[in-house]
Length: 293
Image (cartoon, rainbow, N blue to C red):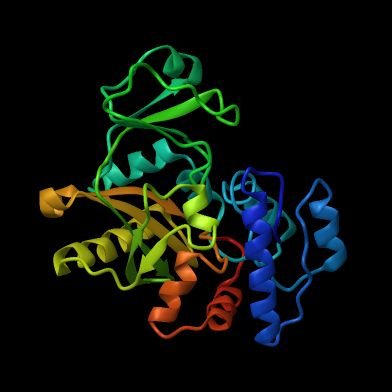
């Protein structure tokens, strides 16, 4: 199940094709479905044993399609309704992280009209949709900015304004009850949409060459985030690390319940690093699928 109507449609189509090819290589019979308005009737006609959820963005990883699959009683991969819904809402997930003692950046939700009218935070800060992924529409307001930002037309009416955290971009995937490894994402500027998905857009150093306490903290925090959100299957948690502050400079940004699985994606690389091939990773997810997630 891939594609869909979200801003991340093209990424999802790429993920879906890669996963379908890997599952066929592993011996599964695979039907590729572009999720549209007739998804429920399409699924009833296909009558699959398992739905491999390769959707990204709204509707696909925010609990909506998970609710449909629960209603149809079709086993599916990745997280269920509640975990998907909370993780996709960046502010609500921060409330869960704070309650669990996980470090997050200060942020507020505000109408985009107010964000474009005045600085709601002392720069530098970040403006982002509170319920999209893949860095869609993200805007960094630098310290030297003369005025408030002019936001992308794609940004929603309600946005998140978040304190900018300098430093390195680190990420860690969790599979089931196991944190895999940590990747240091190296880019020329910051990890935007182009850096995530374009060939050569970023370089991934896996395992990350960081101090052991930082590496272990990423592993432990990722697993804890996965658990307190109630995630299932595969998730990936992203961090920023300000080296000048040591462990105190490690900040959890967000948890992705549907990590990308394209040729340049991070979770398949991390699985490979710990000895799991891409077909084996996809097979694990299929065998883990269920309802009541």
